[in-house]
Image (cartoon, rainbow, N blue to C red; front, side):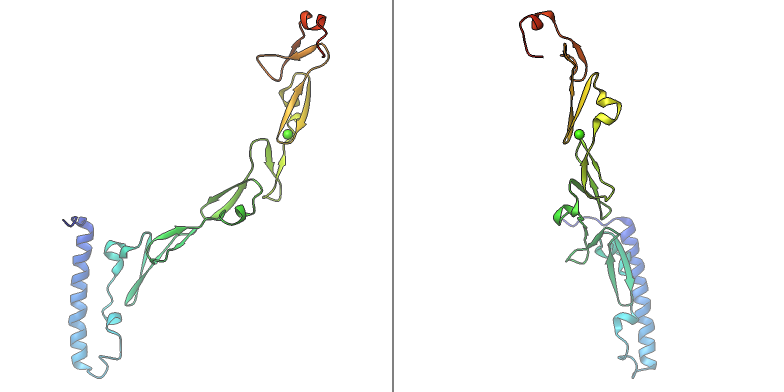
Length: 184
Ligand SMILES: [Ca+2]
């Protein structure tokens, strides 16, 4: 069973029919008066109807009427698919990760590079470099901070150890561990 067309589409279609019929009538009169010229101009141009008024011409996005025909168009960041109706999103990251060293995302057809946690985007916009976490607030470490590639490590001074609650805060080493001779 054929699905019922939306009211708007049906109205547009009827309007097109009337326009088409009117053009047919005008062309018949014109062709009767100018029989030699009647076949000079393509009939579809003389009888142009706006295909975009009917179901948007079948276009997924934009439909542009042209004399005797119509074309589908796609917004920036996409291109017309082989069916000449659908729009395909441009994946700027498809080839060679978009040139990004780390993360690549496509936004409106444009490539945007990013980096994983522990790295920041270089000023060149494509490479990632390690963040030296120790530069800012000593990395949150209560004692020593050692930067590593993609991360950092907190350490403690002699007689202290990293607490069980936090890997950044040092607490005094218990007398038991000191008396057992556990290396500090
Ligand atoms: Ca680091």
